[in-house]
Image (cartoon, rainbow, N blue to C red):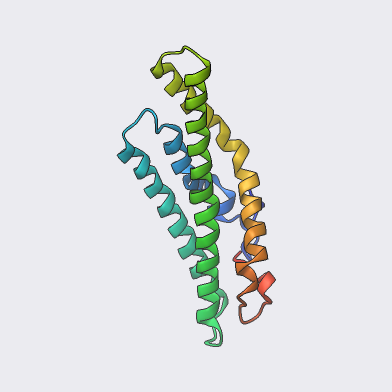
Length: 172
């Protein structure tokens, strides 16, 4: 997968980060790529798929944190940190930043093709969709790494779990 692999304590791949399920987080980028061709409601429905994926991953990380911390001391904090960190990371890395990026790539390409070519509008719209879809694989890793850096430099410095320092408290 594009992002670094995260494994559970048992060494198993993370369902939401290391398998095909990760691509559900990019459903909205597919929607943005098709924005010029489909009704806006369909584009917004793809954001629903991505949001459901983000929520499922956050719930999974919260459940795993609850299983790790069986005593009462710091359990609520550990669960909260796991859920918040995952929700913020996924919200930025899977929905907000890539959705905006593909939206702007598609808008710019449609505009530039309108200025630089004499192609009919339907051809320009299909070309824009192809450009948006083809950009997705190239934006994933830089965005994921940038969000890791952003959170490591900010939010992750603010919290701790009962058995870890703040910089070690990322969910697994």
